[in-house]
Amino acid sequence: MVDWPAVIAVFTVYVAGVVVPGPNFVAVAHKAASTGRTESLALVAGIVVVNLFWSTCAILGVGFVFRAFPILAFVIKMAGAGYLIWFGLRLYTKAGEGGASRTVTAQTDFKRSFLQGVATNIANPKSIAFYAAVFASAAPAHVSWVTFGVMVATVGVVASAWYGLVAVALSHKGISDAYRKKKRSIDRGSGSLIVLLGLRQLIR
Image (tube, rainbow, N blue to C red; front, side, top):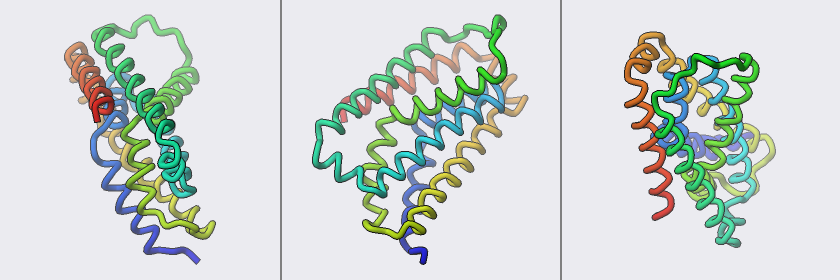
């Protein structure tokens, strides 16, 4: 039997959390406008895989692990914030650089974008904090395996739908053309925003 009230609670909490703009949203938006639909959807796939991982951990009790070993949560938070700052600075300093000399294959582009999505989300302190605290509190302990599967599937569907919508919408030719005209400014703005998100995690 599926514990539908528990599934609905997880759905409600997750929707509220995923639509709040953060590093994942910025990464998808920038990738969609700068490279196109295929690579942005590959990045979305990487983000979704990590969401499935974190939701699984939360349901199984990762919040308890972080409460028992606060130093572990602190180290993960600092490492994630450091990655976001590095990524944002790299995006800022390379703003305006063109991609005319690209020689990699489409398969390599897809794999690289997928791994970028994985790295962005798994190092995202916002995701870690959300799943360890908010999401874990919404998921009741000792759910059946069927309910567990439905909860994880719910996360996968919502994450795919939301970030996929962002990727498809912002990879539209008109938006991509507008991005290329303002590439330097947009890259610097995106990089600065990601750095600020990383710094925000350091001081919280």
